[in-house]
Image (cartoon, rainbow, N blue to C red; front, side, top):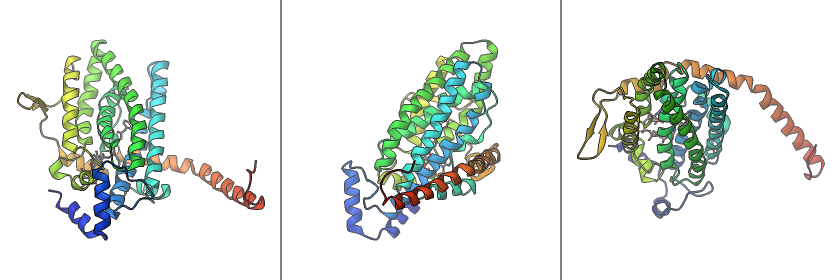
Length: 332
Ligand code: FAQ
């Protein structure tokens, strides 16, 4: 298992003494900060993960954002607006955290828009009605919270600190989703059927969000060794199942898995087989909405061009003014 990632640690590591000190710092619970020495592979893994995470937050605004204009009440519209705005903010913190590792915002955005960068599988599905907003908040945000609470303890300081704030906001996101699901489950038979249908469609993509099984996760071993991940994909998926299944059952809702069972001995809910072929197709760009999501991001990037150009022109004029003032004061 994980042979490749350990091989990478050995081959990229140029200075065994520094590596030993670095690993000792991690073992003793110290945070690694941007100016500190770190192995090239640690930096590469963090850039990969944090940038994918940032892209997920930004693309993740799209499925629910589509319902802001069609929210069923002013209250729901305000809640959804705040939530989608928060996701945009999370993307910004995360791009900043990745920038501390030496990658530029432009490089990350280019990688997303050219289709080179990954983002979470779960945002490549359509939102068919308002029940989907509740189910995304309840299931997807809860899955994200479990993953991000683990990352709030990660060894890289800027990522861990970004996660603390993001998790606080995600908790609000989950609560609003749970509240909507509870109301619909206790509502009219049509509302209950809508929310059940939404669970049926989001269930498997949400389970896949935690990533492949540990035995098929090439990055996990090195991430755990260096304290970037503190729990494995399967451990988090299990924690999700154990909490969410009884909650859904208590609402009279079911999970679309004929093989789901409770294992008395371990106290775990055990899910049936996950369609990993489908997962790999989706993350390689062939899911139901990948094309639509990328089109929306490219359009947004194009629409924002004039803002970037205006900021660049302002910054260069500012630079000239500052030079003229001997570098002191602000040009107003
Ligand atoms: N989707 O070796 P592993 C949110 C890729 S934020 C797409 O196990 P790793 C908030 C993986 O990149 C959700 N690709 O990978 C919100 C790797 O490919 P690579 C995002 C995935 O990194 C809520 C390959 O498979 N959260 O939801 C996925 O050890 C509602 C092999 O996998 C984060 O990004 C996937 N689900 O573990 C917003 C958290 N899983 O790069 C709006 C940070 C795996 O080698 C509305 N990331 N892959 O070519 C992580 O914790 C980890 O990266 C995992 C994957 C756990 C996602």
